[in-house]
Amino acid sequence: MTGYINTIKDLEAETYGTGAVGSFGNQLLKAQGTLLGIHAPHDAGQAAGTGINANLYNQIYGQKVWSMLNRECNALSVIAKRPYTSSGWRVLSKRPAGGAGNFLNIAAASNTTLNAALMGADSLRADNIGGVPENAALDTVADGLMPLAPEYSLLHTSPKIIAHQFSFSELAMEMAAIDDGIGDIRAQLREDMGKHHAEVQNTMLVMPLEAYAPTTDYTQTSLIDEGYTSLYKVITSTEEITELAADDGGNLVKLRTDASISHIYGTNRDAGSFLDAQVSFGDGYTAAEARQMTLTVLNAMIRDLRVAGGSPKVILTGYDTLQTLSDLLQAQERFMDRKEIVPTVNGVRGVKGSEVGFRVSTYYDIPLIPVAAMPSTGANSSCISDMLFVDTDHIWLSVMKPTQYFEDGISNGNPFGVGTLGNKALYRTMAEVGCSYFKGQGKITNLL
Image 1 (cartoon, helix red, strand yellow):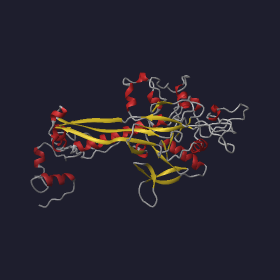
Image 2 (cartoon, rainbow, N blue to C red):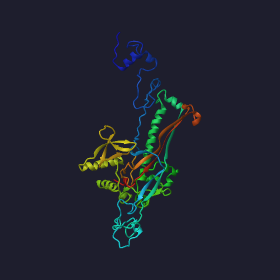
Image 3 (cartoon, one colour):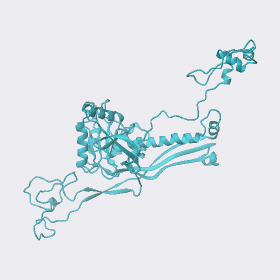
Image 4 (cartoon, helix red, strand yellow):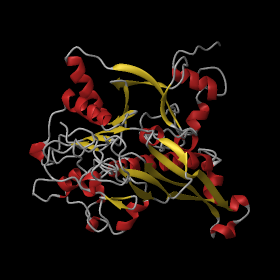
């Protein structure tokens, strides 16, 4: 007699039975006490059935591990990388005369008799800036000729050691290669730990100033200084530090005072210091003093940077600030341009005639790079991410030793070296942030 397969039970009977579909087709299934099919439950864990099904079926998860974390590292990738060739650098910090501001400082008219001190003063008289009479006598105050000299300062730094260690046992490596494992567990850990190593360095570069305060919040207070010097610590000013340190009840926490935040590269920031960057934070950092983001604020920063001799190559900010700026421009029927850039070891560079890199929004031809880890400075909880205007010609990551991977242990025939029946590994980078022109860097904070 010919049988027909009309239902899934008929198919199971024909497949697992002893003959054609009929009275004898379910004998094997009946012998096991079931006539049910072997089904896989949806959205369930590893317990994939009951009875014999639990022994016959198990879900396979696959070898690929998919990351559900955003670990992009834009701040780390956009700044230039240079070899560490010296422990510091010399900077011209003051003019021979006329101060250290963005302009040659000319004082108001004065009846004071000309003297040597006035010739090299921070404020120059308009009648004594270099014009001399015919056949002027050298070293003569009356003729306006006296020796002048600029002032130089020394900045020094040493590379920071950034390291992350991990380990895995011999048994874990072997078990991962069989059954429903991920295969080469070492390769997977190397990939994930490598991304973590880069992500942490990116976070160090955008560490907010408030993270350095107060000292009682940390049990190892010195370790925060062992990381890279934050761009926030480079791009700040005496005025901002004073405002952040103010304890008026509605402000941010006071900054640490034991290793002052104003101390950088072996030098203290003073009022009007050459170490001061261009910082726009409004009237103060209390919650009530947060201000709306406007084009006037952005344009003023770009203007101040260019007046100071800077040339911002990139603007680092958060996705929320980027969206706010986009909404602001489009609401006025203006549109942000797009530019193609390539992050290289020399920082962000544009390319012409090449289909490489990625396209980003620009403002006044300055690329806007969103950084997921970008913080916001301000006591108001509604503040959006800050904006860092970075001249990558003068800010760089000085690298003594690039990222290296080290591993040793039983897989390398040396369990005694690590002291365990397994392997130990680590990533290590030796570098530090450097800056040769502070006035050309800018920051906008306290925005709504």
